[in-house]
Each structure stands twice: as C-alpha cells, then as structure tokens.
Image 1 (cartoon, rainbow, N blue to C red):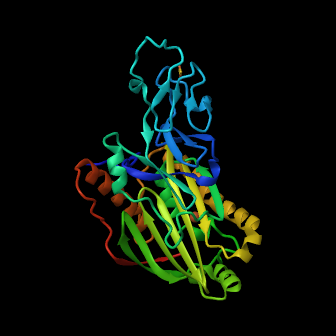
Image 2 (tube, helix red, strand yellow):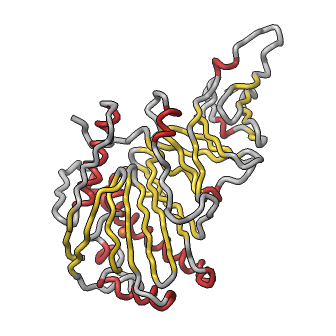
Image 3 (spheres, rainbow, N blue to C red):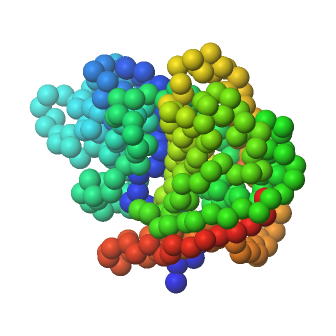
Length: 355
Ligand code: FES
Ligand SMILES: [Fe+2]
C-alpha cells in the first residue's frame, strides 16, 4: 500500500527554473525534492546540473566560482566539469597517481525548451535511461526557441499536494479570487467534460464560464472573439491552459516543484500575448502576482489546520480533480516500483459544480 503522506514522486521531469534566470557563465543554487542542486549555464549556453555538495568536505559548490566551464570549490579548489567529473585536485602531487573519477559529483539530466529548464529527478537507478523515455511537458503550438513573455515565480509555504490541489480547485475562486476584473460574486453551475491525457487529465475545450463574464468581456474587447479554454494537467504538477479568442492563442504553463516537505515553488509562464497587448505587460504582471498571491495566502492559512493532521473530506464533483491527482500519484509510484507501465486511473466523465 502506497501512503500519500509526503510522497514525492521520482523518475519524472520537474520544472527547475525559467531560462531567463540563468545567464551564460552563471550558476544558480536550488533545492529540489530536498536535494541541493547547482544549475550552471556554460558560455555557449548549455545548461547542466550537479549535486551542490563538494564530495571532499561537503562545502556547497555554489559557494565557489564558476568560470563558465568548470566550477571550483571555495575550500580546497577541487574543480568539476558540467557533467560532474572531478577534473582537478590542486593539492595532489603529479606522482600521487589518483583516479579522479572516484570523486565525481552526481549530475542530473536537464532539458531546456520554450524558455523553461526541466530537471529529471530520479530514484537513483539508471536515471539517464529513464529520462529519455519520459517526455518533457511542452506548451503545444510554440517552437522550442520560443521564450515566454511573462514569468512569475512564487514560493508557497506548503507541501506540493496542497499547492497542486489548491491551484486546480474549481470551487475556491468565488471566495479566494473575488476581484472585479476576474469574475462576479454570484455562483453559477459549471458543467465540464474531462478526459484522461498523458499522466493526467484534460478539461475539454469550452467557452469561458458564465461566472467569468468580466474576464470574457476583457478578452472579447482585446481580441474580438468569444474566448474558449482547454486545460490539461499532468504529473508531477504541470498545468497547461490554452485560451483562444478571435485569432489569438494565449497559453500559460503553471508548474509546481517541491523544495521540501514544507515549501513548494510555483512557476507561471505565459506565451502568445498579441504584440500590441505587451504594453500592458507591467499591469498583467501585477495582476498575475496578485492572483497567485491570493492562492498562496489561503494555502498559508490551511497550514494552521494541517498541523493537527485532520482527515480531509473531499467531495464530488468539485474535488474530483484533487482525488484524481492523488490517484495518479499513487498509480505512478506503484507502476514505478513494480517496473510496469503506468495505467491512467482517470476515465472520461462530465463533472458539475457550483462556482
Ligand atoms: S571541501 Fe571542496 S575542495 Fe575541499
Ligand atoms: Fe486559485
């Protein structure tokens, strides 16, 4: 029996960093799933990642220097290349013939596309082989070189599950996001068709909800068409939303990465903003930050109650996506441990709720 409590999935691609936060010749230290990771971008633009602990006496490599090719530990100057190979130990005499490969640091598979850096967090065995089997999440219809027009990164003070289920929860909007430009205060019935999709599920394309009439009007004003939305979710916590209005196609990707059992990073990136709309970018940025901040504020309050480890009572149909998330996680963990193919537990279904 796989227990969901603080279960962190392995053998998956996690969102590491928006590309724009890692410049050529620079390094960035992060913690993913409780592991210290050093991300580096070489002068020629290639991103690599290694464990951020010197194998000699455990000083973080990020405390040292990166010259765009090798990282040098600040304590005794051991040097490592981007693949994690130990290439220099300055205190060794030439005749002290030592096999430097004994001091390599662990490296992580990295995939950079569409202005996003993804990292493959394995469970230790044959990580490189597994990484090639599992696809990196892609925002459909945009080239690999496409950079997002808006990037927002926010830390949520909670375990990944509460960030994911909070962000996909359809019933919280009237209470958490009560702002005029988003929606009115009244509740309306929502009916949506869901289908299984790779490692998750998709809300079939539909017109923007009645209760978001203000948002709809805004889209209509800027694009001259009634907006339609399709949203897909996949493990470990990646949500891609595609909004079409008039001849425009606006896409956003929200990816959630666990830092520890009590901290989660939420990354939000946006593509496809019509060029004339980019003048409003600072305003859109403020609004996106406010919106995500509202989700964070309520999750922060939730931590007060969660300390007492209450049983959470999920209902139908508005909590169905949260229930699927837990089922998907359990099935993924089981399939990985039994070394068999993942079987998607989600079935096509029509869900209805008031929101
Ligand atoms: S601790 Fe890094 S070189 Fe000694
Ligand atoms: Fe929300």
